[in-house]
Length: 282
Image (cartoon, rainbow, N blue to C red):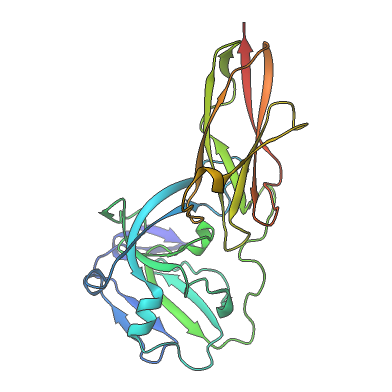
């Protein structure tokens, strides 16, 4: 047993394969078992799944191969949306909601949204959100609803119309464009020897735009080297992260701040560059 708001509940029951998914606010409301969902057409996709409060340069993100059923397909199986609905919300078996009802025009759960049944080709674990998780590509983790129990389309006089996740700073960070280094601060390099630096960048491209470039600086941000993603990746999928590998040969000993930036198609960037500290020795 565990607790939510001081009330005990069974996590085993929350994750049970016997749980169903119900759609309301459609012309023919109905519930679907996991077995019924598994028998439907499955879509395979990969998305950069990042916590909504992943700090600048944070590692609370992963590029996850998933498969599941399109929510648009489920809506079709229910005869389409009911007349007059203008908002949507979703609720997990643990009571989690995707925040206040959201403007249907934002298409959070009607386009590029899936009921995921597998991660990495395997059934969801309890921590992943078994038996099924609602995912909305291009949106932060808070819009992904684990243990999904219902998707409710409603008529609502007051619904959430702002950005799906506005940018904010610590102590509750939210960065719709972000990136990280895969190395720890303080790594050592040697003069004249090439060192390979790696990492990843991503955007919530339903909040901001698709990523356009990855940018690097070795002189405290005075000058930048811009790498255009379209020049490097054929058929770039903007719902995934972009990993990079940077070869650098330092010519002088010292302590360096190698800075990472990322830019979307509208010119929006990470609020502050992400810095990696490198010690270069003779």
